[in-house]
Amino acid sequence: MRFPKLKLLAALTFGAFVQTTTAADYPSKPVTMVIPYGSGGATDISARTLAEPLGKLVDQPLLMVNRTGAGGATGSVSVKNAKADGYTLLFARVGSHSVNPAMKATLPYTLDDFEFIGVYEINPVACAVKADSDINSMDDLIATVKANPVKVSYSSSGVGSLLHLAGAYVLSEFGVANPTKDVIHIPLKGGGAAATAVLGGTATFICTNSSALASFIKNKQLKPLMVTTAKPVEGFDAPTSVELGKPNLQKLVGWTGLAGPKGLPKEVGDTWRGILKDATDDSGFRSKMEARGSVIEMMDPQEAKAFIDDQYTTFRALVDQLGMRIEG
Image 1 (cartoon, one colour):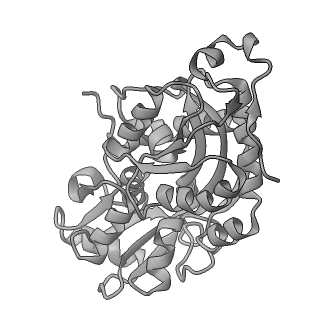
Image 2 (cartoon, rainbow, N blue to C red):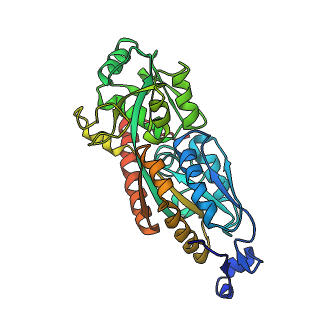
């Protein structure tokens, strides 16, 4: 089903919408869709894979823009500060809207600054090293860390990202007493850059969403050590965290959703929710994302808020446990 432009015959009852939308139809111009992380990471892969079915459903161009920095905060703030007229939307992510708020006391936004259209994707975390590394298992990794404190490193998509928290939490669960001190954290601008850092030998390992690692694993550039699931993930020849006796690591799960600034008109949110549902039902999109280990599951705004709030509570407890809270 193609979604026609939204007629605003009832706009007089929605003052904010009248003020920001002068044309008779929505959308009447291109829509900017902000990806708050760099190219090649889980958010970028999800957004650009979804862009194909979205483009078939919307009458106007969709401008996919990577606005990187501060663990997803830079792009998120740009959408928070945009007009709530439906022409600037955000691919919200676990890092930008769950980990960042849990880790940073002075984050320049809260969850209440956004109107969620829905969460549509969930994916597990996998840890990996360079394919030719002497490290072949989690036991090898932990032994290397303990034998060489402050010499082993892991990369992330930025301070306050899921990758930042995941690396430290995994090490802690496997018995590293001071993961934030004994291992070097290398923050970068996106999951793609973080994976490339391991590939190039700048970082020893990475713990990131399976969707960001799938192509590197398939091409035998990176070697998986573990997936944070109860059941194996297709394409990842590695034990699960449950098999390794670390069921708590199932808490590490990523997600992607679509959101607008606070005050987004209800009609726009409802229209985009229908578009998003049809796009995520597209068989091509589903097959591509499922091949990367993702689960495509639509949550409405209420379900998404409950899910994100629960994840924030979990991650805040982990941050406090690991001493990773940033107060300044």
